[in-house]
Image 1 (cartoon, helix red, strand yellow):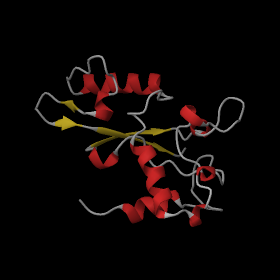
Image 2 (tube, one colour; image 1 turned 30 degrees about the vertical axis):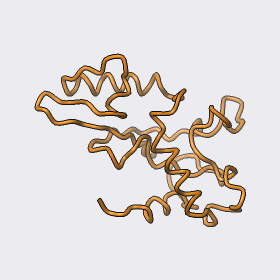
Image 3 (cartoon, helix red, strand yellow; image 1 turned 45 degrees about the horizontal axis):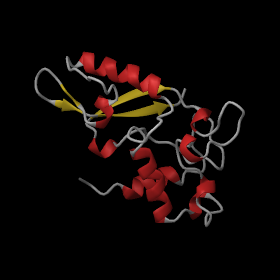
Length: 153
């Protein structure tokens, strides 16, 4: 597998991302789930400011925090100053989105996971996030493991 750390670093350091509400403290969210282990993608048109703030426009923190923000890295004054370790931490947080307790969009992803299971003729059982976490075996035997990408409107 090729080394993609440079590409992922460029995404996290992006200062002029197009499409969607990006503020200086928010690091761009390039995907949900572990794309390195995925062989299938789900795309939707849905960039959301709710990845970073609550209904009262307050920054999500602690267990409610979905993704890393620039404020999480004290040594960086801007995205361009993020250290390699900071980038890795931000990317690891994205990679573990579906495996962390309290997934914020669990109802949405549960429905999507059940749909993907039915699409492949597979049973997701008690864990509707299975297509994103462990994958589902299609009728032909191939295992599909999904990652999710929101694209701009």
